[in-house]
Length: 150
Image (cartoon, rainbow, N blue to C red):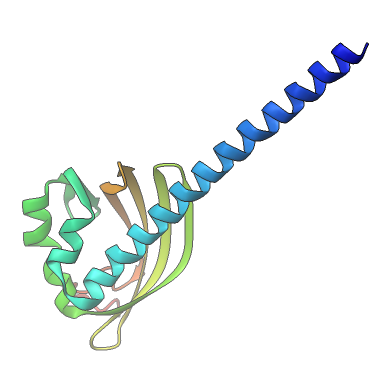
C-alpha cells in the first residue's frame, strides 16, 4: 500500500514540475514577444530603420488593405517605412500573445495630430517578427494617407 501511495505522489510531483516548467517557458516566450512588439512600434516613433531590421526575421512579409499582399522587406521599406516620418506615437491598447502569434490593437498619432487606429497580427519565428498583417480601423488608417476621413 505504501508503494502505491509513494508512486502516486511521485507522479503528482512529476506532473506538477512538468507543468511549471512549461508555464515558465511559455511565460518567457510571451515576455520576449511582447518586448519585440514594443520595439517594433518604438522603431517607428524613433524613425530608426536599423532598430526595426534587427527584430525582423529572414523572409519577413507584410500585408495590409492598401494593396500589400505578403510584400517582402524591400517593398515594405519602400512603401511602409516612409510612414515613420509622419508618425508621432503609438498607444498600444491591447496585446494578446499566444505562442508565436500576437494581436495588437493601438491608437496611432500622426505628427499633425491625426488619429489612426489599427489591429495588427504578428507571427514570430525564433524571437523575431516573421509576418505582420495590418487591419485598418476607421479614420486615417495610416500616417501617409492623404484622405483625412472627412
